[in-house]
Length: 64
Image 1 (cartoon, rainbow, N blue to C red):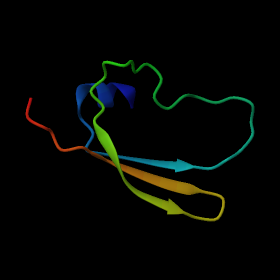
Image 2 (image 1 turned 90 degrees about the vertical axis):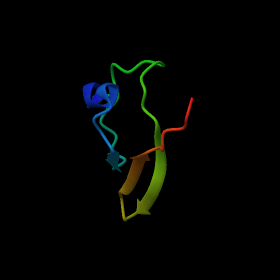
Image 3 (image 1 turned 180 degrees about the vertical axis):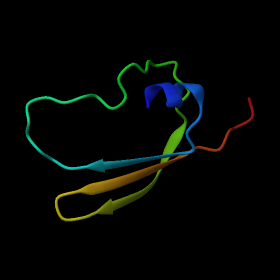
């Protein structure tokens, strides 16, 4: 996913967060640095029982 973000190929990012204590895991955005052009803004948060769904959409490009 980090490669797709870095290349600007994603318009929407959906993450489902389930709090489970396992003592480890894989970082979702591993490999991105401060210069990566992510440019997403939070669009929606849906809270469920034991899960939170987060939706981020690409922020509109502002003229430079």
